[in-house]
Length: 443
Image (tube, rainbow, N blue to C red):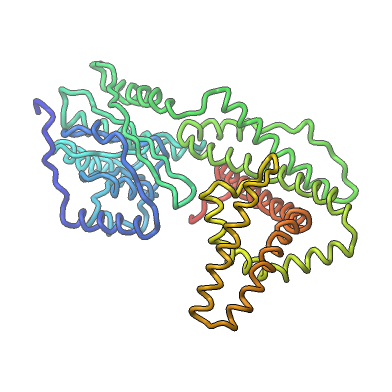
């Protein structure tokens, strides 16, 4: 074939139906996906390489995000139990781990992939795994090798057009997932077909480094993980009576450090989430310690009777304070508009007279309205409660500042300690998932 054809592949009815269902599912679960750099997508055939280990859920997100039909090349293990839906709907290609593992299946997948490319379609493969599993790396290499061989069969006179894709999927479902399409990479021209795959991998490797942590930030992050693990060990040892050990000699294992470096290459957003959890836990613990210290200092200044009366009035006086606040909304609004709500640095008679006139005027207006709607008797009772509730509102404000805040300081410290514990638990759960010591949620 002399050249690359313009797009002629159209989505089948089954593909459109499944894609619509996937988009509806994302909308119902509150997950939105944004496609960045869509203008870089050519009208002709192309190979899309995702900088992320193969994942069936990600393949579905890719299908939902692109308006053009996308043929995903997925490892057979990822497609187990889903063949009927894939064959009839999305047209995904199940790739074996290489031509030597299953030659008939390899040639069948090669023909399917070449057919998609020859008609100007998009073939999507997943890149290097972020973990150290050799089988995952072999599957990634096999998918990319399959796509490159299919391209060579379809367009023997043209080098493969490969576009790197970065998928950023945040932990929280309320946050937006993003798919970034990078500039196309092309391998160096070479007559040896055996060098095509290494050249494509090398070119993609350089592009994938754009979103990685630099060496300084990565080393700082590794030291933070080592520190958190050391603290957990110290807590575990301290909980065991009769054992006194020191953790000064603890170091992050080479396996863990290498795994985190690989994740930095494939999923830097996972390390960002890990760092945020660690920072949030430390910040909450600092806040809890500060709140506890303030509570110990300030509560000691109050007697037992003052504490009991403070708690009782804080609870029982709240309805009266709310009643006073509602009665003084109009006066507070007028004082705010006139600029009289702020406290004067130098007390002057004029502003205080103006404040009094506004408050008394509001009282008179509110009593007149009460008399009009509910009668003279109700207005008389209401007129008495207005200044009383206003005075108690001032008293309750003092109570909140001088008593309630102090009494709640210890409660706030306990709440922050729970937040810190929850963040630490999530940090170690995510770290165990990254290091492969427990399955990912949902698996």
